[in-house]
Image (cartoon, rainbow, N blue to C red; front, side, top):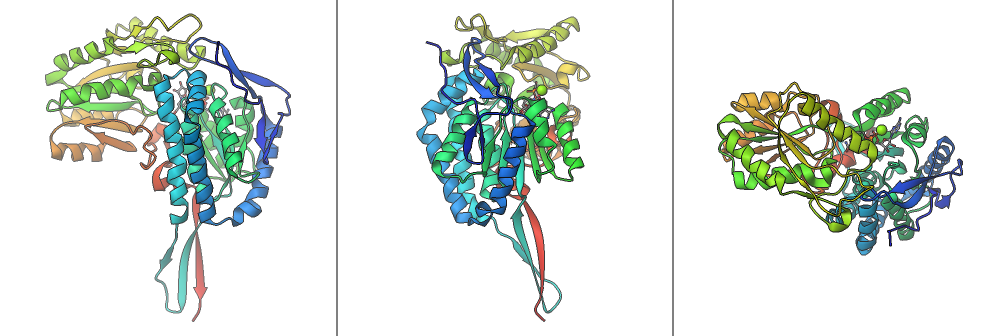
Length: 484
Ligand code: NAI
Ligand code: MG
């Protein structure tokens, strides 16, 4: 029996599940076999208008007066509810995105962690006093932004729900969320859980639908005080334009072409599995995927041969088979990845390793073999553009300066990995990389709720996760008191 959900194709606005104004629903497809697992509401401008108004009422009403302690308790309760529904949420997530069940489970735990973390942090956000002229007292208080709009992608729906809402709710904002039309069934369930644990009406509003309908309506709405977006650089530009027109700030996370720098003194046995898992995780559809390996020329041949052996052992299949990776999200994404591989072949770039399709990777699924290519010229699109699929490119370098030049030489700057046993080089290189996170002798956060995250350049700006996100979702107010 194929998996289906009983979740309603409705929006959640002002504490009620309601039909969208369009009266229409969108089919949600399982990427492993193409079957319909459920439907979401096709929301649009009218629904967004109602959601923003509800959020405004909540912010100006009771929610705006809740104490940080109360908000923290609500978030913590949601964290506990998510853990209590771990199996159910993981099953929805795996079927909706095609990711292996094991990964879906760890995603759900990370989602809970966001609410645990920000639940505990809510009452630790405090201001400052500033020494000033005699007879004055100056206070800096941190206030919520107000009504925040959140537009998120399909690669980690549940985790993105936690990442984008955790800090916003902890600091007292009222929110409107527009998840991705490709996958967001877990978010519908998470919103139900948020209602059950007692978030008041209007504090979390969910409007599902297409990007150019519900998404564009949300980002351009004049009633929004702050925008949070994760997705493509192209849409990131549109979001930033809307934010500019409405004079509001935004945080943008737009992916990357994140490098792993492997020096000749690297611990190869440690590096190899980490480098493979950094590109096959979630079928390469991770903003922080390690998609470029830069290898010092003196160890290039042996290292790349060992990497190819490992890539050849990687297995792709249905989420149910719980292998190394599942399918990509959609036919569109499959074609996008295939296009990159075809152009690489046309340009004579050698394929040096390729994973295997498992028998569970059947008809109707969007499967792509994980592929290792190289050497790739630094000017080639494969060395510069985000593929968002399980495609890893290898590039040789001569010395430390050369490695840094190549690593920093794309338009992106999200994260990086550095593999060397030389302590001074570890820090020297880490400081010179223009990225938001650097991992030394390791890679990736695996959730990493506590760790500030965000990009430089085309990877976006602003920081999410950790205490930095609490700063993003608040604004400083200076109060000057003359008591002289
Ligand atoms: P996208 O940027 O179109 O979608 C992300 C979100 O933006 C979705 O919720 C979508 O509905 C919404 N959206 C789309 N058009 C919009 C508009 N005009 N106004 C407001 N919201 C809008 O990304 P897409 O098409 O799913 O993927 C294309 C490429 O983007 C991927 O191949 C990948 O390279 C990159 N990407 C990066 C992600 C990351 O984690 N940084 C996540 C998803 C995609
Ligand atoms: Mg798009």
